[in-house]
Image 1 (tube, one colour):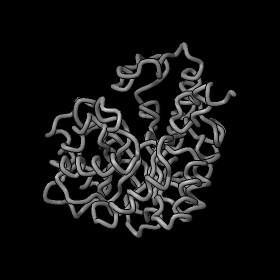
Image 2 (cartoon, helix red, strand yellow; image 1 turned 90 degrees about the vertical axis):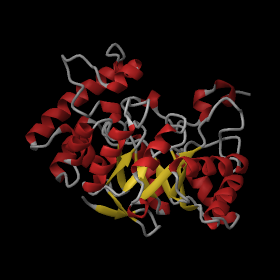
Image 3 (cartoon, helix red, strand yellow; image 1 turned 120 degrees about the vertical axis):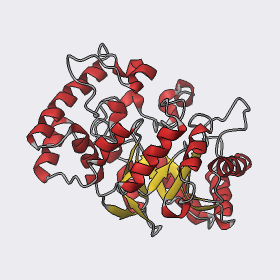
Image 4 (cartoon, helix red, strand yellow; image 1 turned 180 degrees about the vertical axis):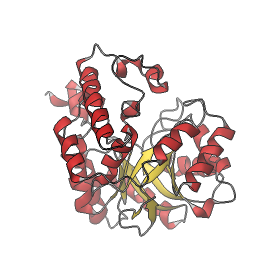
Length: 339
């Protein structure tokens, strides 16, 4: 396993990090299975675990808390807030009112007195940067969080938040957590240049592109991954974007074979090769998934292989642009771009 400094925090984290979204009902993972995955991840050198309050409406946090008992200080613990937690309209977003309540709830579920990294899960257009950063700075000063970051923010919002922190003399975001894979490279054109400029740590989620790069999605085979059952439209081959992904996967699988690598090693090695990326977040649902992904812990792709990947999927290109989560609201809501 390799280790890198998380932004400017001074904290050393593994280049593969464990995402816990699949713990619980979402991934049909029991507590015993989740604990076994955490055990194997830590044994394999992973020292960062990332979860969120909305994963199973708190279920993932409870399971992570149980799994890390007795070894809290041996790992970097991250969670997130801002996504809806129930039907109450104010139980979401990044207002001071909600972040204070949401963090206390997360600490209770995790059964810890602090988290190392607290992240705003999505940009909240209803709340000012000053309000959010002020609340997070106070939580940091209270010792409940060690650092805080953003997740899936558009590049211009990352810049705006950095300037707001400077203007109002508040602590700034230390990290960003964007979606990034060989098949979704859009952040290379805007987000990664910004995070590098401001020295943010980057925890890349979905490096296997929702299973497209796991080796389980191949031409001529029935697609039966857990994600394809939950989101079948993302694997419908009548959609030109999905067909383009499958065509790319076939070329990438051939490249991986030529390089004597698994497709998973190629995919994870690609993400961690970018100088702006700190860690790739893997989200195994089973021990078998974890073991196949840990094989990429020491994978270093050669320049020739990286050039071949560029020829298959061009830098800065998203093969499924409609699945982006950091699209500016005005591109999604016509009322916001018309007088």
